Image 1 (cartoon, chains in turn purple, blue):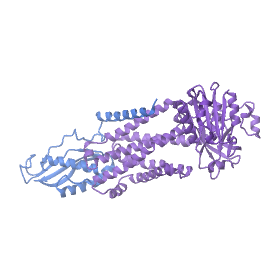
Image 2 (image 1 turned 30 degrees about the horizontal axis):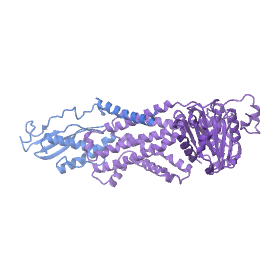
Image 3 (image 1 turned 180 degrees about the vertical axis):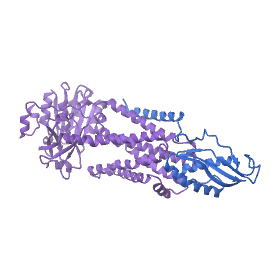
Image 4 (image 1 turned 120 degrees about the vertical axis):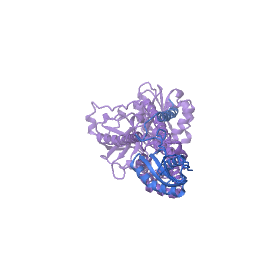
Length: 463
Length: 154
């Protein structure tokens, strides 16, 4: 497998370590039951939260002026805050959950859930303002001033609410598309601040908490442990890993038109558990780039002391990669993703890659055990765009699989050919990697060909 | 395992569990505080020269007073003492006030004088709640109304 090595040619270290090279650790197998348990716990929590707001009410209060709006206002507030907590948990990078759902699965849920907490919290603000206005026989506008000025911690919560609404507005799909990804991402981190600002008024004013030390304690612990998970897995673990492995750029290699491989070297990479097909968030520590992290798949299993990522040069960031100097330090977050051999449900597989999606497929191939009879389909618009094709060919040959290269303008490649290329596709697991459009079309086609949902695994490359 | 139905089912379970726990006898949120249902309201007492009677008709010119039941609200317990002469409300005071925490105490102390003057002006318990102290006001006025009922003053 000499052709498979991606190590820098002129490296003395490589020659010295040729004899007994350390092997990288395989990624851990996911435990789907952990996600089921998490879903049950979160469901119970939502029920309990709703129950809390119901039991905090009495008939007398409900029938008082503004009582109904008051009740609905606190119930929507509590439920909305709880769902916001679930959203934070969804992106907290807790490994057991991440291994099962993958980063894109978690983000999908995060996005799907997003409208709920924000609408509930808007309802909370509107309803409670109206309720207090009604109870006080005041105009709603006037009441806003009273609430903000004279109620403890409501000023902070109002600022938090304003932040929350602005983040929600720029996250609406049609607006978000006009903003640069990195800017949007940095701005939307303000949600953490918004949630922190609003915490106190819940505890101090919420009818379920005032005079109920136990619910206060539980609610406080709930938020504290969520914050702990975020700090540990979103910030702590990446920092520890970055420091431990001390990755730096060794070589930037041109693979094809606009496609570069970045080869990095680091320490103790044999301790970094990675599955083929996973990705890292990469942060190159040079002026102008250090503040943004970008997801790129490893384009090969780690080969300590080296890692390789392969990137198509669309976008400013990817283009800047080509200009990276050897010795540039790199911070990593990850590995993330469930696009691994662990997701496999059947014996045999078909791997379908569009364009730069080939990188994940290349690394995944290395992890496939014998007997998986891989059929690999690479799609590119020209022969030059078929990057890493020789490595793929070598790996496929080694596993006695088949390789199909579909080259040509998009319209010339018909995806219903899939059935001809892989007649037994119904009995295989199908892995699809590529652009959003590519993945959507292939998933639709293979579903149509009878591959069940749980046997289709995909990784979307946002370009 | 389908995760959607599981999430819904466990939400329902959590809701039912909390409501069931709540409706089983549990300690009052204000430990040791009286609750509306268990405390027996003190009998009305007269402060005039007349012997203790509960009827206003016995001595039309006498000052009569009654203490309303302790009304529990989200942030505390309050009971109100009212003094009447005939059908005229002469004075309203707070017989007892217990709050869950200092902020509610502060709120109540701001609201009570306002409520008092409103009640004396309106000569009834039908006055509007004080902004920002709605629950306190409601409890205050409920207790007042019960005290007035006890004295047969509408």
